[in-house]
Length: 150
Image 1 (tube, rainbow, N blue to C red):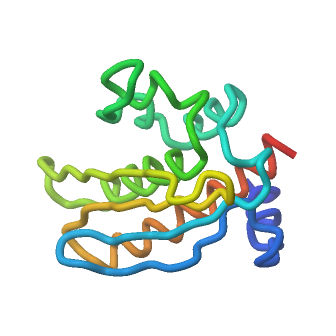
Image 2: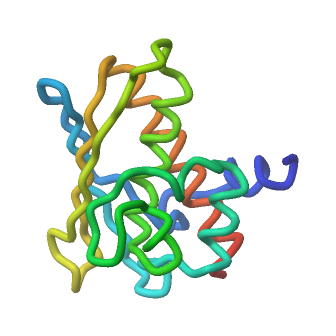
């Protein structure tokens, strides 16, 4: 864990594979515009998926609308890194939720795939908790991408 912390804290803004460009808080959701400028960091791999699952074992079980199956586990080895970021942020919100019935939804879409620009939208019950979760998820995904894809 110490090595993960050193890598994560030592990243300069331009060294971050996933860069947050803007976050807008709307009623019941946050809208996060991110960029993944380097093409080699835009998609997950089996190794990156396994690394993420090691920290967030619930990820493969998240409900997820995709062309392959009903859960995120069906696509997490070959999806976009912004999509992984969405699910990590949802996992963090779920961990922090106080009620057993807390559920969160999200969407991820390329806004300009050629430039590596995407928009992530996340529902929330508490806007500050959603922002905290998104920031923590961004730090984790950046560290995981550097660890697994560099």
